Length: 429
Image 1 (cartoon, rainbow, N blue to C red):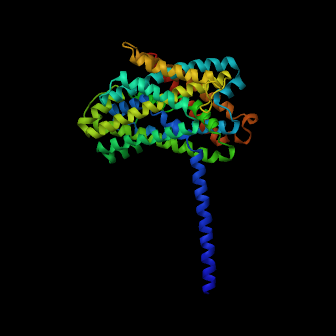
Image 2: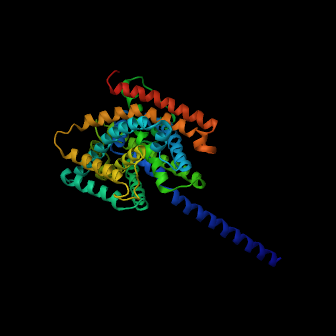
Image 3: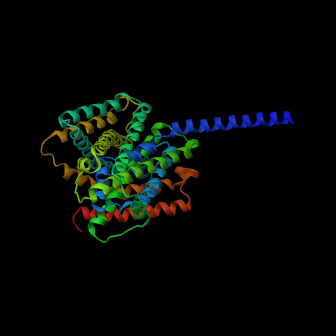
């Protein structure tokens, strides 16, 4: 009997060791695959995104929280398709558009993306300047130092090191949940508002919904996600883990948005305070939620702006070079990919330099970039769906019928909202 017990104990220990080994191997494999999905989703919580969520909380309290769930689902569906295309084809989205629809179409798409991303890059450097001024540092110091740091990060380091820095930057977004908790929100009201979608036929309410959707799902994200997957060298056998990376990144990014809305809704909305930018929100939080909540909010803005000031020029360089058939990639150097690094450098210099010029029409530039962004998004999403359903291109990894129903429905809704948002931006409604 004792021998039998001993035998079963040994077997149990062996099975336990085997299970732990498999678990450890799975964790290590996921850590290798992790990155593109988490980074792409969280970069979209940039200066413009934080401003949008802050204004949503300030103007409407918690009543818009419900919209974050359908936005999360749409984000996962779209970014998962980009990740899958990159893994299966080994090519970026610009490459695939050029190869399947020609250079002329690709050129116009690249020009539109370049315009809209440049406006966003200006917004990021503006966010750096505003957040550092909260800490008492002049923009004439913060912008040159930040621009140099961002440039050196991409030009001097390889992709693995750069990705580690970006993943650490994602962790700093914890500043927003902490700010929200310090604000002392009414969780019963939050849960009730999140569980009960509310609608208002007023133009400001409708525009705010579209603004949240537009700032969470932007055209540059699809290009960067796919390029990053290709650059990282993720293979088809790791597809399921890459999908988890997308889901996890999207969840984290939307949770950050959720807490930004809560922080502003619990304080600024409750006291009837109006803001125009994320920096306004950080300053206004101090007397209501405490100095530390305000500083954490400002720290989050600085981190988000620096993070996006690195990624947005990088994503622009990726898709323009891929679209034109030029060499690209962080793992290359200036001699291997001169157009890639030259474009990245020019965007950094112009983006940072224009913020230092007095009288730069920053709001008008940002406004124009958002209009172009709205016009471009439907085309990019339609290109994606046409490409991912090509058997010759994707083989067994095309969308299934059910997935296609959800994907086309998501795209149709986004197209309608994008058209309405573009029309409203142009002052027709």
